[in-house]
Image (cartoon, rainbow, N blue to C red; front, side, top):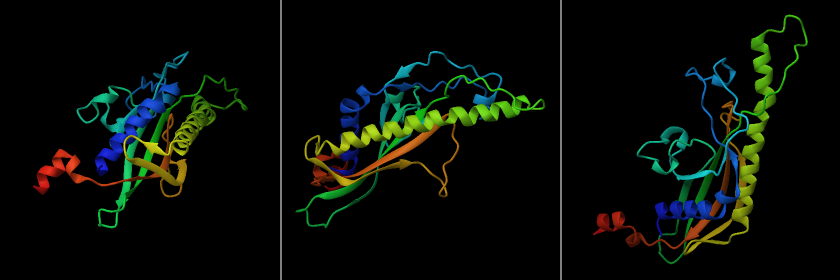
Length: 216
């Protein structure tokens, strides 16, 4: 098995054993092009929301590659999504012991919350303040959805010692929320979490045709 094959093996596991059991809101980017579309007058809440299974993608995030040649399997679905990446891989160079590869699965969700009536506490409480309050109230929905998705993935990995043929999962099993400079970025209505574990496998470069050609 190779670095790339380990990522594909994890993708197959998530597609077959995890994603079919999960339903989350389909990203509904129907607002304007200014970025804060949920706060815009053009934004339309979809009730009831369309629920779909997470799309599973290797390496590329569908937020950047949806509908392109890089990510044809995602179509136009940017979220929910599970993106499988690998941070590092190491072995002792003898070929006798397995490679240890740190796998990271990014969990991307989208949730605009529900329509929450906001009562103005003051007479001069303007519409812009109302929108900001609504955003804070509803923004917790995406955070909870991302945390729950990470929890489901973490439990699936913990209970599955072997994935595919010859790849074994080990701890530490970790999860958390995506952060920048020790803070949680505001991507509302998107939220991103992550799950990590160690994958062990015997490294056979010749199994990958591209690598085999390079070492001929």
